[in-house]
Image (spheres, rainbow over the protein chains, first blue to last red):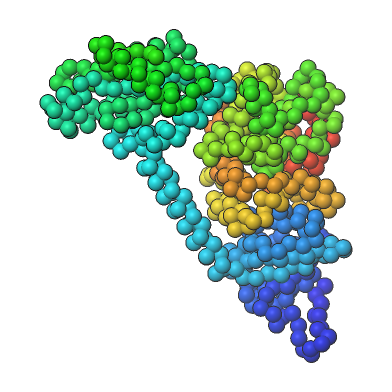
Length: 300
Length: 269
C-alpha cells in the first residue's frame, strides 16, 4: 500500500520533492512505495509500479546482475552502495542508473535511484579509451620486439625470453639446443648483386625459419646475417636432425640459381649455464664450422 | 618439480575418496571448486572425486594466467586435459557446471580416452539468440550490457560475485549460505572469462561429442532455459535430459541431493 510520509520537522515536505528515486519493496521484492521521481524522470507511473516486482524495472542483464551481486550483497551485508544498473523507462528506453539500497530485518528493501546517463557516457568513453590504449600497447610491444626486415623476433626480445626457457629446462630437467646460423659469403651476395638482393635472402631465410620452428621454439634475427634458434626439450640426435633440416630448408633459397648455404654453430645444454655462456660456446662452434669449409653444422 | 606436482599446484587440485570410478568436477564462471561442497559429502564414499580451480579462479596460481590462452574456452579445456594427463586419469566422469559443460565437450573431443561420460549441470552451448530458430536467451545488446555492468561496477563485483544467478525466490537463508561461495577474483581475469563464456557459440561441437551425456537442466533458470536442454539433447549423439523442478542456475548448490541421486543412478546403470 502506498504511504505518504510526513516529515515531522518541516511542513508539507515529502520524498516527492527530492531529485532522486525512492522505492520500498517488501520481503517478496514487491514494490510498496515509489516517489514521484519515477514518473517525473523515467515516465513510470507510480500507481502502475505498486504491487509489481522490482525485477520488472530492470533490463535483462541488470536483473542477472541483481541476482548474482546486488541481492546476495544485501542479504550478506545489509546494504549496497553505488551500483550501476540499467532500467527500462516508461517509453521502453534503457536508462543508466546508480542504485544504493538497504535491507532491514523484515527484509524490506529501501532503494535509492539516481539517473546516471551522463556518468555512463563518461564510463563508456573511458572504456573505449582503455581499449584503444590496450590495442596500441599491443602494436608497440610487437614493434619493439620484432625485426622489421624479416618479421622474426629481434635480438632484444630474444635476450629477454631465452633466459626463461633456459631456467625452465634446468627446472624440469630437459636439455635444449641453441643454434647460431650465419649465411655463407653473405658479403659477396651484397657486393655482387646489391643490397636489395641481400635483403631478399634475409627475408626468405626469415620466412623459412618461421615455418621451421615448433610453437615452443624461439627464433630470432641476431644481427646482420646471423640468426639464432633456441629449441627446448630436445636430445642430441634430434638436434642433429634439426640441423640437417635447416640446411635443407635454407638451400631452397637461391641467388643467381645457386643455393644459399649457411654455417651453424650448435650447443646442447641442460640449462646449467647462462645465456651468455651458452651463446658464446655456440659461437665457438660456428667459428669452427666456418673455418672447416662452411655449409655445415658443428656442435660445441 | 615434476608435471604432476606443477599441475596440482597450478590448478589447486584436491582429491577426495578412493572409489574405482573417478569424477572430475569442473566449476563454472565466477566461482571455484568450493561450489561443489554441497554435493561432495555424498559422493566421497563411492567415488574418487577430483576438484580443481581453473587458472585465474579460486586458489589457482595466477602467475600461469595467460590472456591469450584463456581468451577462449579452448584454453580452459587445455587445463582439464593437462589435469587428466598429470594425474594419469582415464575413463573419467566429467561433471561440469554451466560453461564447464562446454569446456568438457571441447576437452573430450580432443582427447576421448581420458573420458567415459559427461555430466552437464545447467549447460548452454550458446547464450545468444541466433535467428531464426535458436534461443540462447540473450540478445547481443543484453550480453554487451552485462559485460559493461561488470566493467562499470568492477571495484565491487569481482570480490562479491555469487555463483551466477541462483534464482530470485530462493530463501534468504540459502542465499546467505551460498554467499559463502563469493569468489574473489581479479576483475580483469573474471571479465575475460565472462567474454569467453557469454560470446562463444559451440553448438557446432555438440554433434561431434564422443561420449554419452546427461544434462541436468533447471525448470526455471534465467541463464539456461529448458529449451536449451531440449536443443542439446537433440544435437548430441547420445544424451539424456533430466529436468529438475527447481529455480536458478546452480542446481548443484540449491538441489545437491536430487542431483546426487540422479547422478548415482546414471553412473550405476
